[in-house]
Amino acid sequence: MLRKPVRSKQTGFTLIEIAIVVVIIGLLLGGVLKGQEMIRNARAHNVADQGNAVKAAILGFQDRYRAVPGDYAKADANIPGVTTDHNGNGDSRVGNDPEDGNNTTRENEIAYVWEHLSKSGFISGDFSGDETNLNDTDWTCGSGACLTNAYNGHLMFLYDNEQFNPVGTYTTGPKNNQITTGALIPVEIIAEIDRKVDDGDPATGSFRIGHRFLTTAAGNSTECALSSETNGTAVDTWNIAGQQTDCGGVYMF
Image (tube, rainbow, N blue to C red; front, side, top):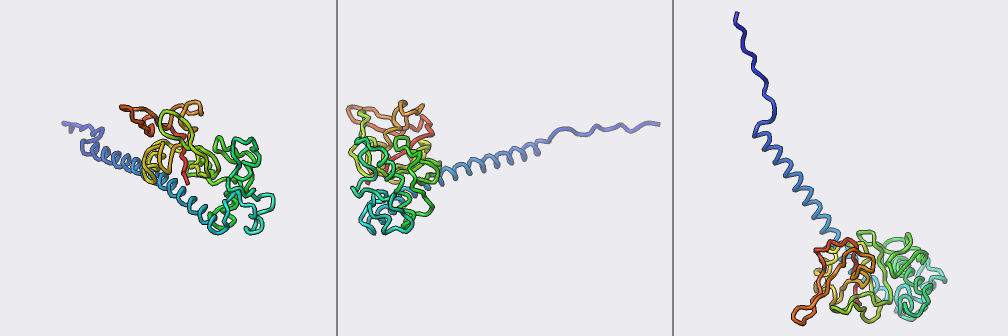
């Protein structure tokens, strides 16, 4: 009696099945990349909107109290919850001139800014006004003392010349009360913010790169912006190719 030949079972995937898997993987990768792009855009908008909101809060505070937050000498009398020892000195500078050597007074007023703004209702949050661990050179604050950006860098409102001036000189500009974005912002994000709120040039306009992010001496492996000359004309650009992840800017008033 003849036996029926046993057919071997098919192994592996058909071309159609492989094609379906490839399509699914492509859709998944596309979704991941699109999601990352959406997160990136959201963070850029968040930082830009935060800067505008802080500007508005400071101007609103000045309009109401005829004083600068952090520097307000009568904060305890007019802002509920602020104590006498968290008054500023009323000289219209948030923190004394950094060159006069009185760092304690300077750090106090920089820390008081967010407490004055929050307790007067201009920003949300609960800020301590504690100057402990505040370092205006590194743009860092202790826990609960300063507003933070989307990358957990600390914003500061202070009297200084943190902004970069035009090409080649690597010098700081005139001193005034100004807002920093906080550090830890990727260079492509800070460049996008500059394009959104100003002229896209890191050395001019109302938004500029912080001076400390220009050189490797500041602790960066790559500069956040580059300066050069083309046919005798100064050219300043954000160093997108450098992919620096720790950059920061300054909002000029």
